[in-house]
Length: 190
Image 1 (cartoon, rainbow, N blue to C red):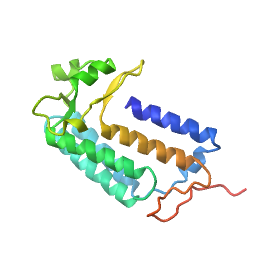
Image 2 (tube, helix red, strand yellow):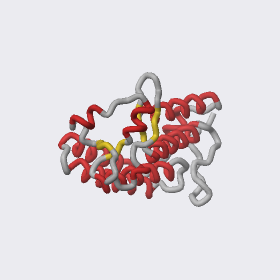
Image 3 (cartoon, rainbow, N blue to C red):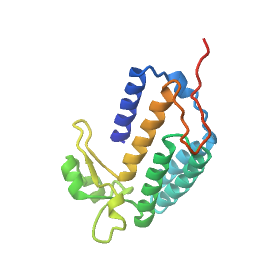
Image 4 (cartoon, helix red, strand yellow):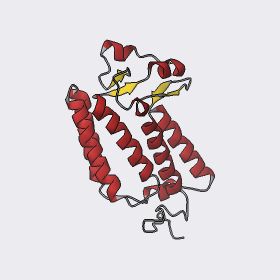
């Protein structure tokens, strides 16, 4: 979470520094936004209820977000978002929770106490039975104010969000890649 916030803050700062604006960002035409709202609600319910509903909620949420990303495919940033979310959904689906490397947690300077006590049902310590361990929380992020361990999927999500925000804020930047229709961010006529 901290990584995504830092990536977004850097993207916004770069966007402003290069003449970008929030108005242009708000003018990005994204299709099927309701799928994202539904995904948030489903994942929130799964998280609050917990138990077997957590991975089910995550899978349904991932499917809804995948639908949203498909409807908006080609917009720069959404490809990285899709890869990151899919990678996280796969590893959680295979393991029932996000596996966390104890060694990476130590390098980040964070604790696994909540996982050990069962207070954090969304994560589990990675062990020899963990499937696709490399896609779990294995990357230490030792920021002083809130150290954390993230997955490669989290890194892709943060990068995708940053790319979308930075390019969306900048005037004259085509948001669609070479395989999508050219979409310019909304600009005010003066």
